[in-house]
Amino acid sequence: MTITRRNVLLGATATAALLPIAARAQTSEVVIGVIYPLSGASAQIGVDAQKAFETAADLINKNYDFALPLAKGEGLSGLGGAKVRLVFADHQADPQKGRAEAERLITQEKVCAIVGTYQSAVAVTVSQICERYQIPFISADNSSPSLHRRGLKFYFRAAPHDEMFSAAMFDFFDALKKKGQKIETLSLFHEDTIFGTDSSNTQLKLAASRGYKVVADIKYRANSPSLTAEVQQLKAANADVLMPSSYTTDGILLVKTMAELGYKPKNIVAQDAGFSEKALYDAVGDKLEGVISRGSFSLDLAAKRPMVGAINEMYRTKSGKDFNDYSSRQFMGLIVMADAINRAKSTDGEKIREALIATDMPGEATIMPWKRVKFDEMGQNNDADPVLLQYTGGKFVTIFPAQAAVAEAIWPMK
Image (cartoon, rainbow, N blue to C red):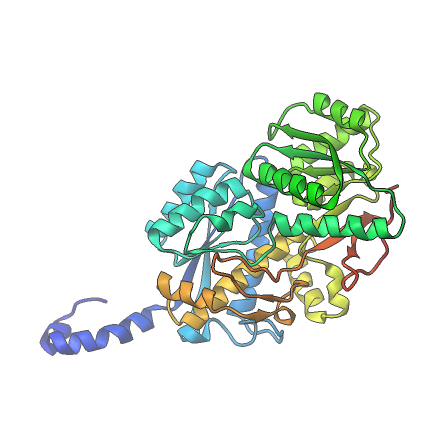
């Protein structure tokens, strides 16, 4: 607020009374930080994420007739119609760069909340900075189970984590076995970051408890220039199911190396990541007919919930792509955060945190096949039901669970 001669003449009491009005008047926009890899090997993820967040911001800032929080009416009604302004930061897939960019967003850009980050390793450092400054952080698409178990008060995740995703995979295996399919042995293949390590640990525990034998558990260095030795081990093990946890460039190299060495897995059930990315299928999709990936999102849902198709078209106009498992979670991450800010009627971190804790968003008010969005005491939504998708005929179809499936699984894969 500018100090004028009139302010001085009004006196201290009158000036104090004016401050809340002035503060409200200045809240014409709500600034939210969005931190993703916008350069480097994962840059395309960041570019697609940017379009997903911009789609969500358009829905919030303009008037749309959708049964989605904040779609109807312009801006945040709880803050007098204030518009959401996004500030994007590039963490370059580097946890320390992520730490620095999060601090810059908070101290220089004055964001009231942050959403991110794609790589779970980056989410670790970004969320620590948010905790220090008491700025709410929504982990839009990070799936490492350990992220919400660190005692952080300002960390929230609306989407499933890898224990939930992996449990869905093993439920699927159990269902197939009941139908007479032979599934006894598994090969795990995972990168050496928190994402890959947590994924492998979860799958090892589930295999032991469900009676499956892990015949290979191969950890490789992320962004490795060669996977020949690792693929030779996978070929020798020849498990009934190969379960990779890899980002896009490693996933492409894995599939190319398998082809070079003549290894044709009986089935591949992937932990999403690179196996949900269009870039991977553009490069090696001809070798992946029938591959299965876990996910959070299914475009099939548009048949039951038409707004899903309409919002997907908005995203497609911006990006040239359909929503996938990542971009859909990114979209919802901003919707959930903005909804909390709106209900908080404030850009104060503690008030936004309290509003996030109180979130109870029905699944029908999202674009996801979830029961609802409601956070537990650790900031995790346990009602984000995963789905399994199979790549067939150049597109993904939902095959599990039964209530969401639109097709029977092709098993073994072609």
